[in-house]
Image (cartoon, rainbow, N blue to C red; front, top):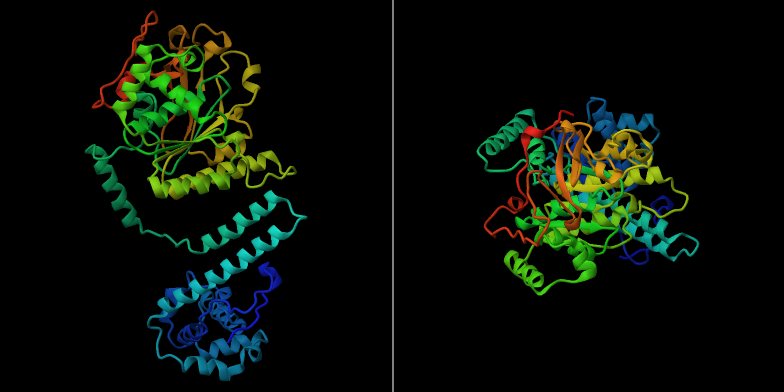
Length: 494
């Protein structure tokens, strides 16, 4: 028989007409009866069952007492539960001893109790979905509320339900040791790689590459080449048929593709953007594109993204395309969970960086987020080499990141010679700096940067500056081979 159900105000829902909420009252009775006659069932369900998951109020009260006794290492049976209910003045409210006895007579053991508890749990999740969905609808009808605040609350409601079904994951020390040793054996036999390729081989060797579940922050002042470095990272990964998502909040998809073509085909970017291509250059681009075929490099150039929307898009792409790398350009252009004008920007950045770290962990892929540095670098005397304190809104970013890397080009500041590296000329050179590495060592070394191709490469790669020289790697070559080798002897202690 249908009835009108009014949820409590703290459930933030309105009247639901003509429908009974999802429930399994008969199984609730069986569970409570089993727990009072057979203590074996306690260990099976106490890690996930909570009082609020029961539909009937008196069942909530009884389970709360059972849980309390269990957590205090007291005996749990008909008499102890009855006695504790009396102490709290709740025995009569649940139907007295008669009802407790009636519950114990409905079952003979705790067999199948976990299965019964899972069903009760699932019905609770359905009720929460109804409750939260109605709250979202009510807020959407309220004209006095800010749209972005409503959207934030909607994500919070749905996130609350999602968190209910996250399983508890525990592993023994032995299991973990076996897993780690097995992975190390595969690394030694070259059956797997520790991480994805970086744009410079020496950096890849020193770090092991971009590792799964890590948040990598790549920071620099404007004009240093953050986007170019990130594009090469994504491109060489995609050329190996490894799916990559590039979220660009600053540049459009055509602009990014222009840079990729310039970098890959060694055509000056100005020709693609201003001067146009010769017939020879056009043929070369077409040939190169036909050589590489479909490359799993996916660009999303939505100019205004908040962290929730980005996470939703990334999860969808991961499910459909099996993403292995996510790149975000760049962090400070992203909106926080809410576009509220009153929200502190540092707190907003903190929510964004935390969200990116959780995304990397949940999808088990590297997430590379580009970041701006503060103007303190410009006013600093000497080499103007960046450091961790130069990160804008740096506290949360530095804390959440597994790796923090910087790009530094002294030539940009008119510095003609390096302050180390035997004072070599800085012309068309840059430095990569790994200033934080949670799972490895720090490293600093030189690399080449060719502005006309927006291309970072290994230091010993040679280019002919006088004439057009397309450098197309054959399709059976490792994509990184197109960009030369680095000189490991040139490494500088951090």
